[in-house]
Length: 113
Image (cartoon, rainbow, N blue to C red; front, side):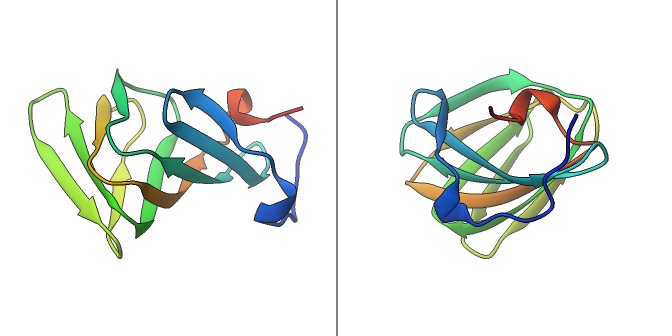
């Protein structure tokens, strides 16, 4: 994966990954990646997992994360969270939400042309 070490959110076009889920990949290398997400109220991200560990910070809004074991984590503006590598999780978007997430290692599928 190539690297990008500097960027500004205004220079990155959002990619709609799923209905109501928009991602901007900001900076990255093989070891780490930083993304901005805008999620629309009512959007759903199914239960999934990935190799990368995931850490996030909620700028605004409200998201309900759920795990395979049935546990739920409600995050709001100012909240942070962490999902270890390969831990299944999903989300229900309760309000329009913006958050920043870091993935380690970087996710090659999130590198946009």
